Amino acid sequence: MAASNACVQNVASVPYVRVANLGHDNFQSGASSNWRYQQADTAAQPQPNITVYLGCPVSGILLVESENHLNSVRYLTDIGDVKYRLTEVLAVSVEKDDNQYIAVEPRHGWYGYGNSEDEALRRFSSAIVEQLEILEERKNELSDSMHGELAQLKQIVAPRR
Amino acid sequence: MATLESDKVREILTSKLKCEVEKSKRDHDWFVVKDQGQVLATTSMSKGSKETLRDTLVSYMAKQLKLGGAGNFVKLVGCKLSRDECITIIRNVSGVKPPVVPSPAKPTGKVR
Image 1: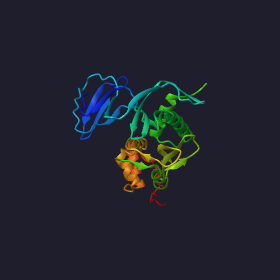
Image 2: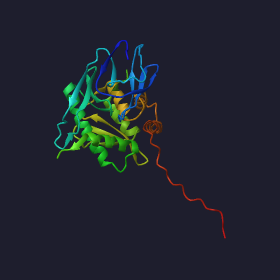
Image 3: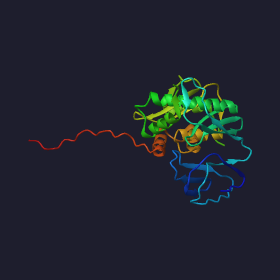
Image 4: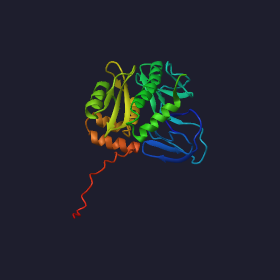
């Protein structure tokens, strides 16, 4: 894939692209792996020049960003919570929009924001714990979709022993 | 650009989308979208003073709310989408059908 006026960054492993659609202002691809988050829309403006090779093994999430945006990737091994721990390392990208920093885990859409990179990451960590608790407290009222979100959170955020 | 003011967003989520507001958590206030007894979506906003939510953040909030994109979120805040329209979008995006309410039994019409 190549996109003009944009930076393409490889983040992690591993889906196998099965479907791709190029719309007016977005690129959409579907992966055949067993990722929980298998489909993504990526803004690709202005005038993108995107070539997609269907069926090629693609190693990673392709993030197409506008130029001059901060984009760093942090690997979280701990969320700094006395009650909860992470069961796996989370790759979190940090984006900057004007003076606002947003830490995002792209597979699940979890995020936190703040006035600095560290504040965004700190709030990302507290947000996933708080959301886990919010959904746990309402587990008898959750739609199927929200049950799925709770299950994903519980898979990643576990009580400390 | 789809920037939104946090105080306006709070007001709309609470009074128009009729979210349950959970303020007991340490860093964020949580907004729970419910319809017919079902929790359909949640989103959060940092505690603290009024701030401008930038374009990127608005997009992530819209996704978290399952509103299908920042445009619909902006329409909601701009009062161009009703609660019912939003709930329909959220249900479509998340694939959640409304719970089936059993209809009252019809009389058979056979009287002996």
